[in-house]
Each structure stands twice: as structure tokens, then as C-alpha cells.
Image (tube, rainbow, N blue to C red; front, side, top):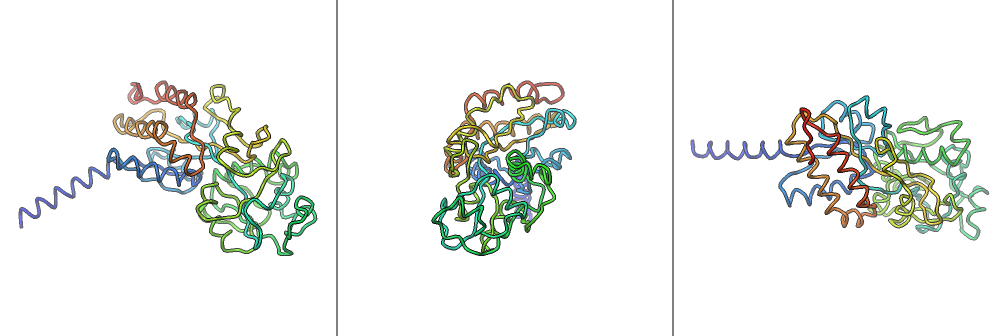
Length: 342
């Protein structure tokens, strides 16, 4: 019996040490499918796991500020002033697209075209039916139902919402005047779902609905995406190539705090609602070894995670941006005054 107890205690101690070594993060649902895949691969390779809570960007920002996780994740970048006030460093991990999706019987993916103005008017509650003349004019020959439009939006503080409303704020004066841009806004119409997961579930369930999700959720849930008219006047589909086109002109090196917004970018091939997903960590780390383990994980994601990112239709960060990010780690992330990344 004593031998059994000793073995049991040893196993429990090992399990506790393994759990303590696992990294913790919380925030954006936008990158969650990729973070889950990266975490699984990295644990098989190194034994270091990642417990990531997909709770929305607002929750991720709150948790990293409270130091209850090793990192926060947000699709809404913080300004340099916000970062400095909280003692945080931010850096982009991937680029992806926010995609309007619909549940319309008989309408195939990519068959329905929407303009920026019409999309904004749908979310403003001005365009209420799918056969509205404004939609019909964009889709000659498409059999549009007489069904009412049910708008679906996020119910939680969300970076996906920030990207979506940032876009609408740029392209619609009416949206700018009535709603604006934010992780949470006063929605003029619709029902709210929690997380990209919740919005996807509502759109799947409600006939005649329209929602917005990160593209991986549209693919995983077999949702019907639209074609959206971009700044160049071209109707484009959401793909890794169109997200990459939107991100191509970004100058990360000139952005204080790596604050870059990728919505409504120029170019015939650019997807209009593109955004980066950011990681937030404390500039001053309390545990140097744990912080090094965290940066090792992110460095592995940059170096060896491109295939997984591409498979899920995210855009990996270019080599020059990765080099810039790692230089920020070396210069700004410290413990007791000593650099952690060398």
C-alpha cells in the first residue's frame, strides 16, 4: 500500500509540474482554430502545452492586464499610448479575413454580391428584406427570396466586431454617424451570439440570416459567403490570396506599437475586411524562464506554423515582419531589467 501511495504521489507531482509548465492565454476567437492546431503540434514536439480560452478580444485584454494569463489576444490593436499605460507589448501573429455569411436557400457560396453601402444598410436595419431593390440591383438574374433579413452580430467584446465595424465606419457615412467603431457597439438591429462560434451557430440555424465571422469558421461550418465589392470597385471572394493582397502594402516598421489596420485597403484583389490578430504580453515579466518558454512557442509558430496557418486560410506573417517582432522582443521584453530574448 505504501508503495502504491508513493507511486500515486509521484504521478500526481509529475502531472502538477506538467500543468504548471503549460502556457496560458485568453482572448480573440478569430485566431482560435489556428492557436488550437499550433498548440497541439507544439505539445507533441516539446511537451509544453497551451491552455487558450477563446473568450473574445475584450476578455483577453482584461485578463492580460490583470496578469491572470501569460498572454492576451486581440484583433483590435491597442494604440501605443494604451500599451504604455498598461505596460504591454503587442505584436501580430497572423492575418485573416472577416467574412459576411448568409443562410439563404438556393443561394450558393459566392453567388450573392453586396456593396459596402448595402452591407452597412443591412446592419443599420435600413435594408430589411433580401429582395430589396438595392440588393436586387447588384444581383441581376439571381432569384432573391422575399424573406426578412435577420441580422446576427457578436454579443461579447470582440476584435472581430472591431474589424467589421472599423470597415463599416470607413465606407458608410451613415454608419459612422450612428454607430461607429468598437469592440462593442450599440447595434441598431439583430440578435447577438457569443464568439465567432456563436454567430456561426445562429446563422446556421436562422433562415434568412446574415452574420460576420472569421473565414476559418465559415469554412468549418460550411457557411455561405458573399462576394463583397472592394475599394477598387471589384467584387472579390474571401481567400488567403485576397487577404494577402490586402496586407501587402502594410508598413509595420513605421507603426508605433505595431498598430496596423488592414480594412478597406487599395488593390483590385484586396478583401475589404482583412485584419491582423495580435498577441499582448507584459513588458516586464515576473518569471524569466516562463517568459522565455512563451516566446519560444511564438517563435516556433512563426518558423514552423505556416503550413497550419495556410491550411486554415490565414496569412502567415512575412519574414521581415517576424524579424521586426523578434527585435521588439529583444528590446522591450525584460525580467528584472535583463532581456529575455537574445
